[in-house]
Length: 269
Image (tube, rainbow, N blue to C red; front, side, top):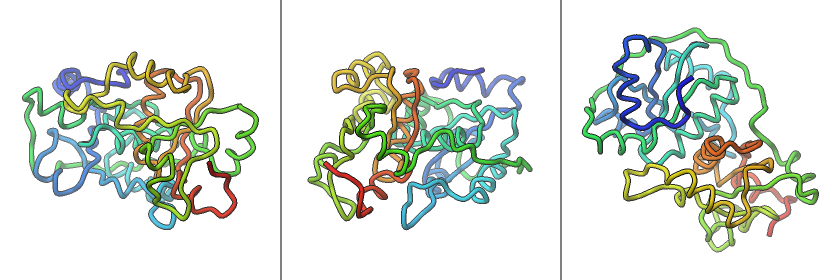
């Protein structure tokens, strides 16, 4: 199975291989940018389609909506899906979480996304790529997500660690995008952008560096982990990073602060 993290040169090689007919390249970006330039052959999935929408955007879309997405990109049980975006991996990571939720684990992330591809001088194309629809039937397995009712009993037991991917100001309650600000009791804050190298086309920092930075604030891979942000967009990247680092267990809280901070009875620090 191909590596979870692909460099641009490795994706280029895969695209040139005649024996890779099952490769599906997915661009998680705005339609305007996609139509202007994208990696040749990439199929567009606009990020909004991967979220449920109001009142709690971070929730998973309906099974009908996810089925539509997967059929529209031509997904089959044998497909190798390579995802990328133009922002450092948040939307791409969320799409990987969606693939996990339907049990499709043959996927990779293009490190740095379209910026890394372009920085290597590889070609880009414009317009919409052709896509053959599939007729795949999917179902949710519920193994990669948690809800409020799952989290609250675990807060006092020390069974889990919560990775808050929001900004420090959101974490401290200084920037508030819900009825209440603050953080889940015991949550540890490592902002998603800390993992990116802005001087290297938004590629991830070396994984060993990220692991050391996480450990310095108490996030370690040997403990079951739940990650969230405001709408499980930014935490799409932290979910992916935990998988790359080999965390014992990583789950998303898709309701994120958009649910927790608007709930009248959730504990907040």
